[in-house]
Image 1 (cartoon, rainbow, N blue to C red):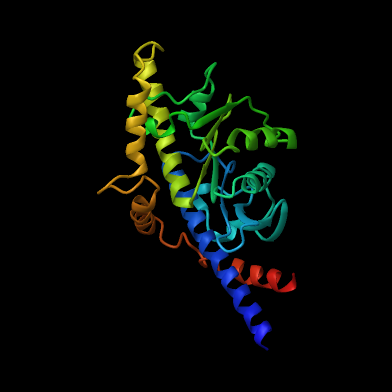
Image 2 (image 1 turned 60 degrees about the vertical axis):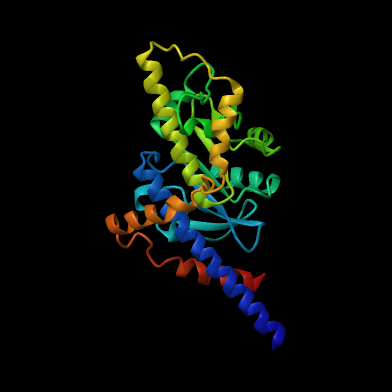
Length: 277
């Protein structure tokens, strides 16, 4: 009875963790939508299971972000869909499976299509220029790739290679949009928010100057500004932990009921799947 009871408790804890993550991811999609970052039903926000690093959650294809609820998410083990969700969108599980396998520190991933970032990615040389407060976060932390909209295995491998050494948190896809990684759902959400701000400001500034960027700041000054986001005495790092609670409170006020069953059905299905394994 002892081992069976322990296994049952472990399965229940894993199910509860999956449910809590699904709630957080549903909130993340709705918050990104509120910021103008959703594009019909494409893209995804994925999170690694907190108790089993080999598994992750990602949304079904056909989920419009303004309507996201926890039951839109499925649990994957690599590319294998275990429980939950509906029809998958290939990049939404192939890309996270590869990135999570290569980067143990990555706990959340977003692929979104805000117009401002897509505009930036249409340039001959897409780049986040250090022109504004949020843009300093991304200095020397952005990779750029030509885009392959099919996201085949060879191309997914290129995405992984661009992120592998841990120095980059973002990939810009030329003529497409971006992929963002983070250590938590909160962090990846905030980074997406700040990338969107950076792109909006950059596009507006270049439009105002006829496409001529201002004279570049010295690298040491840019890195000095970037370090301020890493936290210092009296100021915690910009990892989304301070902003998240208030953003979710606003979501509760505007969209009561957004959390649906709070992932209860997904938890039960995951418990059953873990029990059968």
